[in-house]
Length: 315
Image 1 (cartoon, one colour):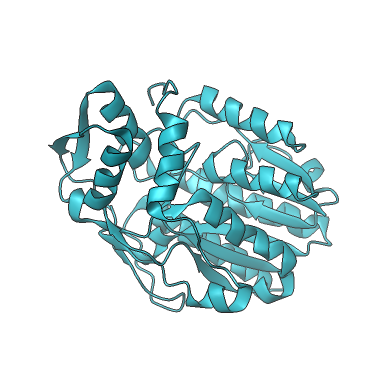
Image 2 (cartoon, one colour):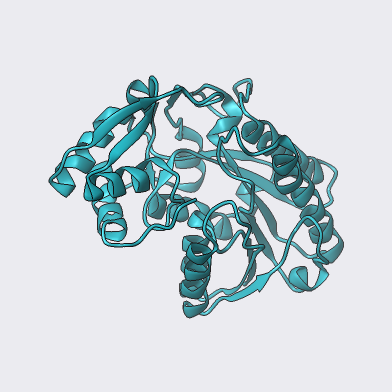
C-alpha cells in the first residue's frame, strides 16, 4: 500500500513511518524541517526513517506543490503541525502550519483521487483544560495550538461529509518516548538530572494529571487504520493510555530510573496548559481492538536509555 506520512522527521511521525515501512508498505515521508527546534534532531530522525526503507521529501505543505507527493497514495497520515503551547510562537504560525497546510493537503489529496483514507492526527488539547471525556463531548480548546488543531480536524471531517475523500481523526494524549521534542517534560527532566542542573517546573504542574502514552502504543493505534479504513471513515477516536498519573509521580519514576534527584525550580504557569488528561479509549478499544500495553515505568526506562547519553542542542 502506498502511504504518505507528513511531519515524518518529527517525533511520532518518524516512528510511524518506520513501522509502516517495516510492515511492507511503500512509504513516502514529508517534512519541511522547520526551525521550531534543532534541525539536526529532525535530520537524524529522517535518516532513521530512510534507513527503514521509506522515502523522505523536503516539502512545505503550506506553500509547495503537493501533486507529486500525492500521486498513487492510498492512505495519508497527516501529523505535520506547529506543535506545543508556546507564548513566543505567534498565532500566525499555528494558523499557517496547522490549518492552511492541512487545507492544502486535503485539497491535493481530494484532487489526486482514489484515497482509501485520510488520517488526521489531532490532539487532546481540543478538549481544553480538562481532557477526560469521550469523543462526543463539547470541545473547548484553551490555546492557539488546540484551536487550530480543532479547526484542521473539522475541515478534514467536512471533506468526508461532502464525499470528497474518506477521513478520520485521532486525538493523541500526552505522547512520550525516544525522539520526543527537546522542550518537552521528560527530555528536559532527564537532561537536568544527569547534568545536575535545576529543572524548571511550571507553577501547579506537579499536580497536573496526564494519560502519559508511550509512542509505541500510539503507533500501534494509528496503524490499525490501515487495516480498518471503512470502520475509521467519518469517525473520531481518542488515542492514548487509560492510566493516569500526576506529573510529580512521573518525575519520581524518572529520578528512580536514573538514580538521582531533580532540582525542581518553580516558574510561572504556562497559559493554556491542560490541568488533566485522562484518555477515554472505550471507542477505539471496541471498534479497532486497541489496547495500550506499555506501562509508564517501562516507557520511561526506554526514554532514559535514549536521552541520557545524547547531546540535546538548545531549542
